[in-house]
Image (cartoon, rainbow over all chains, first blue to last red; front, side):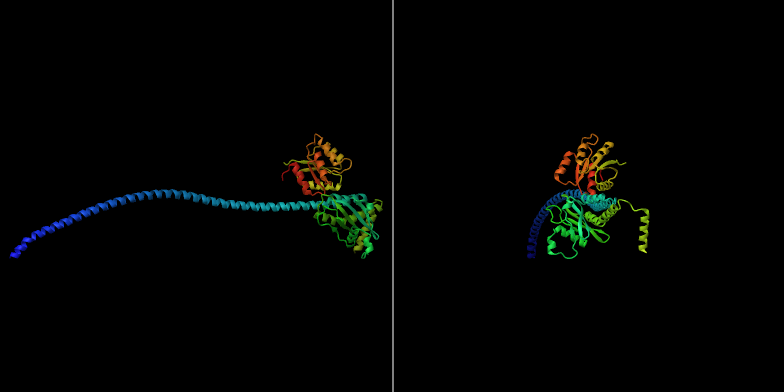
Length: 306
Length: 127
């Protein structure tokens, strides 16, 4: 019973002590709790401020980006327009280039046609004038004019076959009396023969024998040549009856052009007939054949063709 | 309506004259009159007005250079362009012709397009 008393006597102190401890502990806890709460609140407030600031920054950034985006869109639109215009410009340039090519082609063609027309005019005029008369003097004048004015010859001569010789019958720019008669050799030439004539003579004879024209192809200006610039065989039908010799050309004549070759060809075929016609007309004392003679000749030609 | 131009060709060679007339027929609205030599040329010039003159130099009776001199002293034609067309290709011949008042100097043998171009240039015909 005493133990119980003793025991009973100690119990309130322990309880009080425990209560005090608990109070301390609670106070400590509360203090800590509030302290932590205050700290947390401070933390929250700081975070809130930080977030506000961040939000403001982001909003500003967003606004800037929106402006930028709008500006980018305008630039993109402009770029699209530039691209479109560039394409359009390319197309237009391509059209212009094609038109220029066409124009250039047409201009070239036009020039060619004009040149061709000019050449044909030369041939027409030469042929027209050559056959416009039967008077020997006029025929010779036309031949000389043709060579001087149309071809650009300075000195030339006409050789016609007479028996076994080539005889110079007319000349211009070179004295006729200075031109030798040339004996025609059917076969090969001996050394003695060769030595007796100059290179001009040999060339003229060769052109007569072969019927192939000699026309200087290169530059005609500069140093004097040791042989003629051109030798053209004159034909009647298929027979070569003479040679046109161009010894030298005018200073401004640089080379023979396509029209000159055409004129030489025309002369080769027409000069001898014009000369022969004029000679026959002179033989007939300038009288035209009567109607009876023409009828008889026409009839004779008709009979031959049967 | 296009303006009509008149041209005088003074040339003693019938062949050359025909060729020049043929070439000038390629110039639109150009009417060509022909003269055999310088004297004939002056006669034609006295009878009418010409917009351009083409002349040879070596001609009988009156040569082309004398003609140019006379043309330049003629009040009606003193300003008319003159083209010399000649076989004389030397630089001194060209110089003399230009000094006498020729506007252009073309040497023979001619190329028709060259003559046409010069005539158009002097008549200020734009093509």
